[in-house]
Image (cartoon, rainbow, N blue to C red; front, side):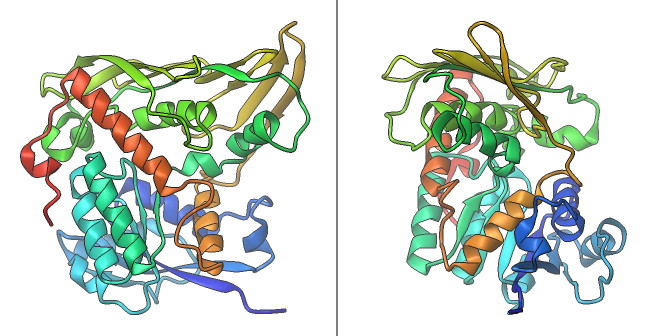
Length: 365
């Protein structure tokens, strides 16, 4: 048996999302992780960096990472050190929104592949610069939209566009929502409420709702940017805290994407209306269950998954498989997809008055 392709990960931003992501790809024994279970690929965490102190990186290693041995994980109190670590193949950047552009630019400049958390950048101009730099450096770069690699999402794509048989016609409309309560007095919610951090719900959970529209109404990213009309209730800090966007494509298909940080949606998050039926999905960011009905309300398909973990490991495994093939871009979630999203976010923020400072919008590094 040949040796596995080993991916050595570095993490910048040792917080909650990084804890979930890293423990997921290190520990999940989900039977759907075929490339990991058959030892085609192997993930290793080799470095953690915090800009505030080496103690924070050390605490992340000691208290948050659960694997058989943490001895090989290097802890750094500056980002320059992780950039210079020759053992690090790819850096997962999970820092606050306003830092994404600069840190990703620096990582690419130092020759590191990058998986960059969403929102990919503050604006479209920054996205274009990073995309161009990655191509020039022949480095892998991807936006961390992990839902696209979830089996629920993939199977629905197969039913509507690919190999699975279930004829419910062509898509006419997508309605999607992701809403949860972000307490105003919770210090952990500063990233949502502060404009200087690149806050607002559209730049956080709203991206999940929007990507169901973009992914199914414009799967191949070939249509013109849709006509967008959006509205929001803004917090006292000026960022949007409850937002609705209507997207209309040139072929007449429509999407309604909503998100909120002041109410919680207890119902199903996603509805895909087709000419001969519909698809319902339980949750927009972390789907585990879906249903397909025809126009007579006959249930054609119902499937529920029991994942071993958060299901973020599907994204990590996809990245590893891309690296093993020498790819510099994901064939499933291309940089063109990230660029399209960044344009749409620019438009929505402008319409609802979620305005950032010139410093955040800058393309200077």
